[in-house]
Image (cartoon, rainbow, N blue to C red; front, top):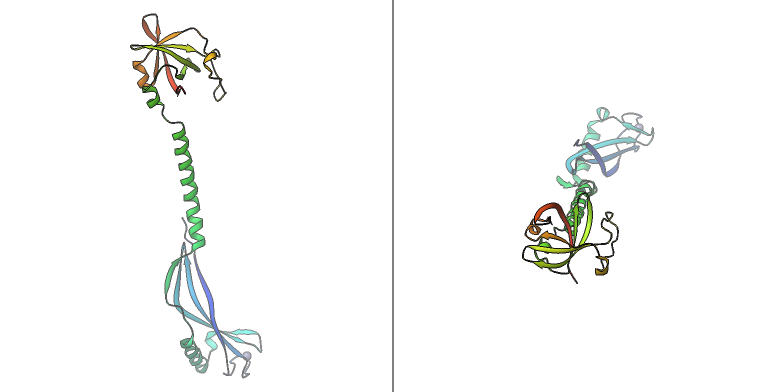
Length: 220
Ligand SMILES: [Zn+2]
């Protein structure tokens, strides 16, 4: 990050002085202006005790360069300066820049929060899978497509499932999970593999059909 440093001059006072103008020679045409400087760097602003003066001639409407100041003008400058309410040296954080600095952090935080929330709403169904019972419906992905199955019976390690009549479903589509829609031919799967979120289907006596459990809908 590039930190920009800017010096600001804040006027803290002005005073007409009766000294003779070193430029035009007139009396009562001079005005001293006092500025206290502050330095802005990055998110910080430092008020320095440095006070600078500017001499202005109202007659010629010009600034009188400090090299032209007479001793009388110098003395009046120092004298007036000592009476001014000079702010003590201080450093503070610029609020507006803090907002600019924090805004991206807040946005990033919000994105992380959202992703975490989204992740939580796609919560790992392992717990529901481990407590599988008759009447639950499971969404299984195998052979590249999703299928809803209704658990009809459990016997030892064997699950008996009825597939949904729409054997494959589009991602995100609404499937009517009413029990009456599970009309497919009963298939068997291993309960033991459920805790690993694996859908291991029995083909006859052998396990050879493998898929992945994506979702579980507990019986209401
Ligand atoms: Zn003048």
